[in-house]
Each structure stands twice: as structure tokens, then as C-alpha cells.
Image (cartoon, rainbow, N blue to C red; front, top):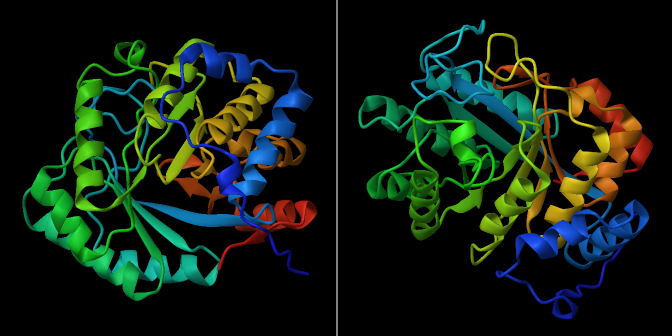
Length: 326
């Protein structure tokens, strides 16, 4: 059964001037009130029965010069990771085709670079982007920081979206990574926006940050006009060998509240329920969908961290009566 939804965007004014205090008050509402408001706004802008299924492939893994405290791919840490250089184009496109056959509409390619390279490897990535688009899928990349020309080249190749997460607030950023600045992240997002490629940018909760740090990150994301088309919300998976390996797990209700607040702050964005799902029950994941998450990564791995397998996700979505977007 399909449901026809009447668009009601005109009843909610998109805002680009949220404050930390305002979002903190929303985040801390009684849970029923928070979920009701998030679901009300979600239904104005999105079909509540549909979930975008995305697949993420690490096309170049490990030996990253950045020192992100959460990431096992960093060359600064002692985490075990299956290092490999850039995959060949045919292999990546075969994986994209398999993802499409499994129901994914977006194929995301991630490479562990600080800056996207200015050599034939970048040309290979452009070929991958063109191939994914030829399959009829959305193409997304996360390759590190970009120059103006690289952003334009990706746009011309047909890239749908570029992922470049802020991770956390500007105030807490140097507790997470010191090999790049927050402003460098914002500069790349601006280059992507100016190229005409949509933005995929979000963050991680559970790295020792405060609630206000989380709200500050959402404020920064919501200052973009238009809002980022995709906002991934990740829960830290503490990986052995990383500086954050011993941090306590995030309470599942914190993930629900973060997703709901992101949905209210950025009504028209896809809120992607990303890393951390493998640690959450089906009941908690259903609450996250009710809170406004309408995109997930499928497949048993997100770059180098575990993710629920396809069969588990099919069971989950069936229980919730949700369908993947065509």
C-alpha cells in the first residue's frame, strides 16, 4: 500500500540561525514530546515509510596521515587494519553493481587521504564516479580535503554528494584531531557547495564531548544555506588500538535524541543513521527511525568498522514496515 503525502513545507520555516541554547532545550525535551515534534516535522518533508539504503566501500584503506582519535586507519595509532592501496576501477564498479542489486540507491567511496591526490589516482576516482552514475545510482565520495579544481572535476564527473564530516564542535575539535583545523573542513565544504555537488556532513557522538558540543556542531551544520542534503549521525565504535578505545559506550537514548534534534534543526535534510547501529537493538533503531532518521548504510562493514548485515537489516525494515527508496 502506498501513502500519498501532501507537502507542507510552507508551514515550517527553515532556519539557519539556531543557537546552542535553543537546540539544547529541544534535545532535553521529555522524550515523547521530542519524538512527537521530530516525527511531525519529518512527515512534512519526507515519506515516513521510506528509507534510503546506501553502501559504503573503502577504496583505499589505512596509513592515513591524520591522527583522528576514533579512527583505526590512522598511521599514528596501533590499531589493526587491513591496509590496501587504491582499488582498481573494475572491482569498485562490480561492488557498486552488487550493492544496487541488494537495494542500495547510493554508493559511497571512501579513501584514507588527508588531501585528495593530484595524480592519476584522482583520475581513477573520477572514472569510478562516472561508472557508478552509469549504473543509475547516486555517487558519493569522501577523499579528504579538496582544491577548487578537484571539486569541479568531481562535479563534472557526475558526483552526487561529497562526505566531509565535522565530527564534533569547533570548541572540542582539538580533543579529537590535531593534524587539521576545523576551518579546513569548512573550507572544503564551501568548495563542494560552490561546485554544485551536494553536501554530506555530520558527526560522531560518544567521544567525550558535552551535549553543548553536539548542539554546537548542529548549529554549524544548520548555518549552511541550503542545509546539507545529508547529515550522518554516528555513534562511536571504540576500536582497539585507538586513543578512544576505552571510552564508555553511548547510552542508546542519546543517539535517539541526537537524531531527533538534527531532524528538527534541518527538516529537509536526510538524517543518516550511520555507524553504531550494530550495537543497538531493533527496538532502539526503530526509535531512531521515529526520531527522523531516513537513511542507513547497509552491508556488513563501514570502511573498517562493523555494521549489521543485509539479512538483519531486511528483518528490521520489515518489522518497521519500512521500504528502501528506489
